[in-house]
Length: 104
Image: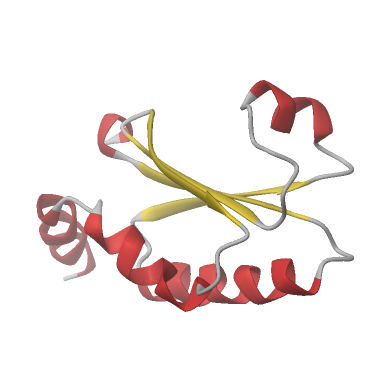
């Protein structure tokens, strides 16, 4: 259901090594948790949208939305390896059960 959707917005630049690392973490997470929608924004190509979302220019930046509301954001984190745990903290267990039932 769209109203229960979880959306991860990854703001990056192709020229930013930490952004590439974060993208790999998010891609790996998404492969294991298909209940999340991933939106990737490029700081150069999507500058207007990034400004409208009031995402700071500090890269990489990651924003998590649940049911259309921002629930978490971070940029320039020291330990991006904790991203999966952060995302899972906001995941509704009912969505997991529904997703599992759809795959049976």
